[in-house]
Image 1 (cartoon, rainbow, N blue to C red):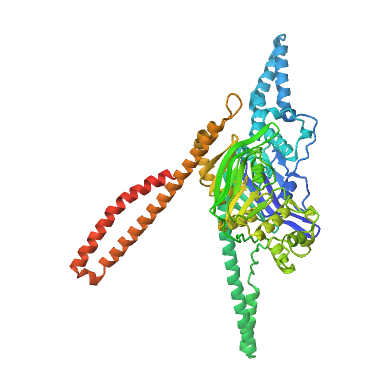
Image 2 (spheres, rainbow, N blue to C red):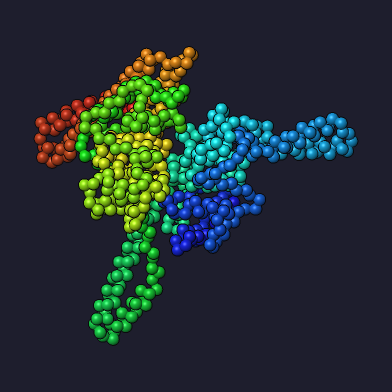
Length: 640
């Protein structure tokens, strides 16, 4: 055991955040701390690192073990460049290398006992240097920086000039390079794009020390952790296994506890009724029996009522009218900022009922593309067509659609003046704004609270085409799952940008990857994208890549668009053929079962002509089914 938290309690004023929290971490173990926003996850990490003092309880760290901590927000002030800042982490190794070189020079002049001493010191230093991976410290720095999304031309940027997200990535780089025995990471994926998150996953899976993560990225947690520490209303519960396993066990445990509590409550009520009835008889024997039952009832170990989650959003997304089948058509779209070309010759269509996710690394232009479609930015070239009866609802990750000077109540009432006070309050209550919370100014809200206001406006819009920019940012896992369910049940069309791979996997029916200044189309969810990415990128991105003279030909863009459209059409045809084949197999198998039932009927058994007729039909069905089964296997393989 490398770390132990024993009966940790913490309150702020009258509010209890943690109450008797206990768990332990083994050496090399990877664990996650989960819970809704405000459950005390970050508070617990700060207590473990010693940044906050617990009201009671203790944190025990194994002797000689080091611990490193990445907070959510970094205020890294330094006059060094990014590379120099990371080089400081490796200073002990660099100084050791200098000592080795100095010894080599001294040994050339030394003799006798002095030389023997120097050789011993030289051997010891070399061994330590190798153990610290000293010969590769420069490539290690470069690898970590590139893995976390820094290009080489950014290595010489001053740390003081970086954004908050970039500073967090520098801090994470320093922490990984320092290699503590225990890593404490608070939302490490917040400022990473998909390729950087994948790199970090692989790094942490192979990390020799222990890791404790607070994160809302369920895909990330599933790949890394083998233990879940859940914080709920101040209490702690530990579940072995991945996040998915925890989620399943949690549901079973909650159901079992609620059933046990309900059964006990029912038994208590029954006994109280019997006691009251016995006393009402007002006879000595009855009263004694009642008193005996009261004593038995007093000995019962009364179960606590299981905690109920009362802070879940209630989202219902439903369009007011049905749009035409062709919702959005984009032709030849291009956009650049100065010399930076984001994309060119983008062509794609979106049809009614599709849920399309746009993915890609930071800086490829995903949010810009949504703003172009919404008319918030002008395109350099190309055309954007909305279909008939299309009504857009837009969710902006920066919440520019909100008015900072208004209260939460005014924001909703002004946007939907036809709704009375009670209706506005009921809507806001569904998004966890109750009491005086509705009179808070938008400017004073947290990122998560602003997100909930934007979602409330989105729900009331009754739009049939939702355009969402990072809708899961600042949402806890429970809220994400509620939004996922709402989108799955939504009968309109959705186009969104997200880095949340679990969310994409649950909601997307199609993925557009913005890479190499073009879009690659995947007809499936995130798992399908991972399976086909290498093949599709090789087919399409290479064709659209920049030519030797620095320009892309318009003809190649049109050719690739046609190729992609043809591939999409073929894929849709395969899916339709597969569905038709499945339906025909089901029809024939159903009829075959009906024939079996008729053959077992006593009235049919005595009718020779009817028996022969049914047997012939059964044989004919078997002949039809055999090639259909083969056809289904072929189509199923093609549709993978």
